[in-house]
Image (tube, rainbow, N blue to C red; front, side):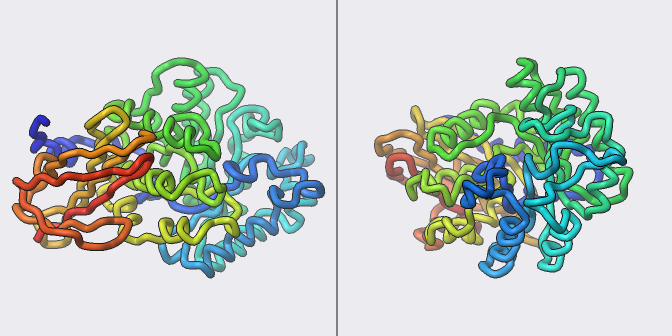
Length: 409
C-alpha cells in the first residue's frame, strides 16, 4: 500500500469554493423529512399509516423534543411534496390542503419553533411539482415571500419537468428571491441531479455551490439495502468530482436515512450511518418515528458517531479501495483548541456478502502525532494504543463496518 502521508495536507489545505453567504448550514443539517417513507400520502381515509398531515408533523416534533433527538442535534422537520391544494388562490398564492392541514403552515411553524426546532417545506421550480401539485414557476417572488411569512427555515426545491437551461437559471433566481425576504432559509437544491441524470450533462458544481446550501447528486433513496449500496458506490466513484465543493454552508446530499423501515440488518444500518457520517452528509430521517428500533435509536443518538458527522471542518471523507467491495474511508477532524494534533476517523466498509480481513496501517493516512488511542465508535470502547508504525489486522463481517476514531495521546 502506497504511503499517503500527504493526505491530511491535501484535504485540509485546498481552497473550498464557498460563495453562498447566508450564514446557514455551517454543519450538515439533521432532522426528518416526509418523502422517503410517507411520499405523497394524501389518501388518509384509506391509509392512515401513510398519511401526510398536520397530526403527523406535530407528532414528529413531539418525538424530537421528548426522546432526545433534539439534544443530539436533529432539528429540521420538513414537509415534502403533496402538501398543497391543487390550485392557487385568487391572489396567486399556494394554499395548504384544507383537510390535511386545517390550521395552515404558520400554525405548524409556531408549534415546531416553540419546541426549539426548525420547520422545512418543499416546492418545485416548474409549473407543477413532481407529483402534479402547483409549482413555483412564474411565482418565485410570491412564493418566497409566502414561505418567509410562514417562518420556514428550510426549503427543498425540486427540478422536475424543466429544461437544462432553465435549471441553470431558475435555481439562481429563486435563491435571490429567498434571500431578498430577509428570512434565513436553508436552500436545498436538486439542481445537479437533474443536470446529470435527466439531461446527461456534467453539473457545474462551482455555480451550484455559489447558490445553494446543499444539493442532491444522485437518485432518490428507497427502503432497500441495494439502494444504500448504490448511493455509497456513487459517492466513492465521484469523490474527486465532489469533495472540492463540500464544506460548511454547502453540502453534497446523498438523500435520507431509511431507518424505521425494517429494510436493513444491524450491520447494514451501521454502514448506512457510518458512510453518511464520514461524508459529512445531511442526516435526515424519513420514517414513522414509532417504528424506529431500539438499536436504530442507539445509532442515531450515538454522540461519538454524530461528532464525526458534525465535525466543524466539514470535510468529506476520502475513500480508498482496499479490496473489491471493501473500502477504507478516512476523515480528519478539527484539532481541539490549543492542540496542534488532530484526531482522525477510519471506517472500513464491507459491501460484500462475505467476510473480509485486511492489514491496516493508520499511520499511512495523515496522522500528525506519534501515539494515538483507538476508540471503537459503535461500542465506545477504547481498544488499544497505537504508534505511526503499527499495523492492525481487522476482520470486517459481511455487509458491515468497523469504525474507529484515533485520538492523539
